[in-house]
Length: 389
Image (cartoon, rainbow, N blue to C red; front, side, top):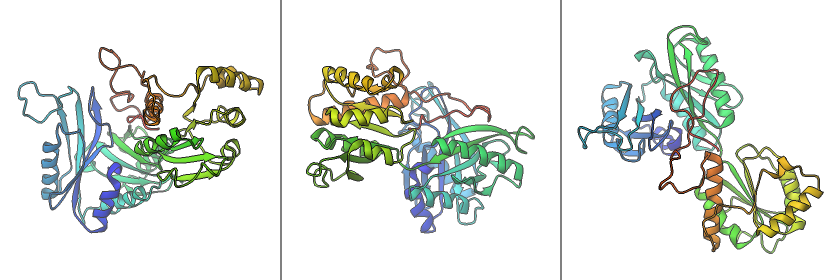
C-alpha cells in the first residue's frame, strides 16, 4: 500500500472511499512481491498493480465488492492450466492478496491515513496489518514510527500491539517489508496470526564523485532507480546545476572531506568517477571502511592496479579492498556515457539483489532473488522484497 502512498494520500485528503488490494505473500515465481498494491476508488479509478497484469481484472472486481459490502478478504491466485482465461499467474507462481475497504466510517482509516501522509512526505513509517488469522481481525492495523511510537490497534490486545510494534520497528530500521508470525495475545499466546509489515523509508542515497559526462548519465539512471542523488566534485567549474539539472544535490568540496561529514547507511551507493589519484585514494581509503552497500571506482585495469597499490600503501587491508568494484560496472561492452551508466546501475542492482549478472537465457539461476517465499517465525523475520536497498 505504501508504494502508492502519494496517490492514496491525495484520495484520503479528498475524503474519497477506496479499497486497497495488497500482496501479502508469494510462492514460486511471481511478478511482484509483498507490499505491492492496487487501489480502486468509489468512481472506479484504479492506481497501482499487484501482478503486472496477470490478475488485475479479478483483483479490481474484489476491490469493487469490498467497497460495496465493507468486507475484508484474503484471496489466493495461482496458475490455471484448465482455463487460459481464468484469473491466474502465467508465470506459474501463487500470490496471496488482502483486499480491504478504506471508507470514512472504517476504524482503520485514520491509522492508514496517518501512514499515507508520512510516506507521501518521504518520512520513515511502517504499517503492520493482520493478514492471516480470525476473519474479524483481518486488516486491523498499526502505524509505527522510527522512534518506536505507534497508533491504531490490532483488536483490543495491548500486548499484541506492543509485540508487533517492536517487530515492525526492527523491519522499519532495516527499510524492509515482510511478514511475521505471532500469537493473538502477543508472543506465542493465543491463536496464530500472520502480520504483514510494510515499510516506507526515504530513498537510498547515491553519491557520485566526479562531475564528468559519465556522471551526468549516471545521475539520470540513479534517479530512475529511485535514489536520492548527490554529485560531489572539488572543481566549481564542473560541479554546476546547469551540467546536472536532475541531481538532488551538487556539492563543491574535496570528495573525502564531504564523505567524512555526510550521513551514509547500509543502503548508500558510492560511485567514484574521478579516476585521479589525488581524489581517489583519500576518498576510497575512507569509503571502503564505511558500512555502505556499494563502492565502485571508474578506470582501466591498469588504473585499478595502480590505485590498489596506492591504497595498500595508505593502509587499506585486503578484505577492505575486496569490497571495491573496479573497474566499475558489468561487462556490457559499454562505450557511451549512457551505456556506461547502465552498466554501473546493473552492477548496483545485481549487488543489492544477489544477482549473478549473467544472461537469463539458458541460465539455471533464479529470475527473482527475493529471499524466502513464505512467512517466517517472528524470531527470524525475512526480507521479502529484497529491499534495499
